[in-house]
Length: 437
Image (cartoon, rainbow, N blue to C red):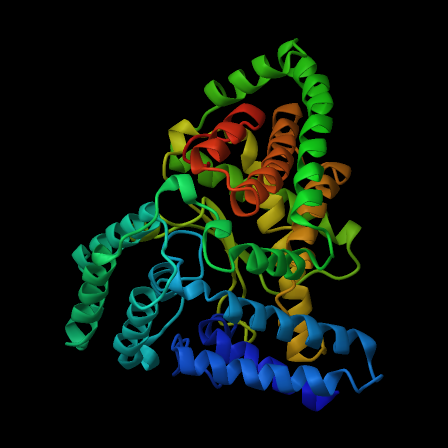
């Protein structure tokens, strides 16, 4: 089982070598993702072979199940050919994955691979029966335009680097993206089948898109009771539409300084009481930083990146101040608890500091990763971390956002919703701002 675990981890890092650098695992610092069809077929064959052998073993059932999940997940992503139709924020695509990571880790050893990486992405995007969304093409091209216009020192040391990004941007502009009316995977060849498989991998369950859609609707309905209860204490009204209106128009940030201060204070409170609630807390610290300016238009509004294994880099909770004065400050504390302490920073750093195998430390099991983050949002209330009922409304706001995403994700990708249908649903049933939607 140890050999199979090591083989699986090797394949995972070959699939995503930038992650290895981010967490400080040696051996992949001079590599980039192989986006070519031949490379994907070869990796798929390796993982299929691992799967055939792991089924024959009864040794260490937890590790066996992790191997099975990780191998199946990567095979599913390869089969879905996501690289052929994903360009834009929040997706594992060349524009965001490479540029975002470049601001967080040293990729000097792999710079010479960037032109090949972008050529492979271009070939996959231009030679397929699948088309990305037009808005994602435009967003990716605009992101690259900002990147190319920035005074980056990297351009000085590599004559091939800037032209490679410029060529990729020109290639994006030739793509005929599909309209927002056809936003979901169900509009692509084999899209419904691929979506169902991706759902199984992400949730680790056999729940169908129909079941998940219904679950989201039920959760949205149940949260309205909590909104009414807390809204009555904060504003003297239990009218949910009125509570939503006030959350969208009141309690907004004054600017990025207030946003940063709030996050730092929330995490400090959590770190102070955490030893009373956890038998083990991470040795590595967690810092709060603003997303680099060149990344802000396409980066998530908040996210976490792992600490380095050797202690050379802390865990970082990244805050994106774009549109800050239009966003509710009630979400500040719950997002900090989810992403940092006691959320992903505790979860990922404690795992990395154990004696478990690298596979067990760094497995990408989203249901567990995000499940812990969601759990800690309510745990934070038990720990007395929220500063008051306004912050608890933010806790409900994040709950509603995820429940709403169950509805709109399945609506888009399984039931053929347009993008506007999804936007309208989130506006009506959550307190998300337009920039958050």
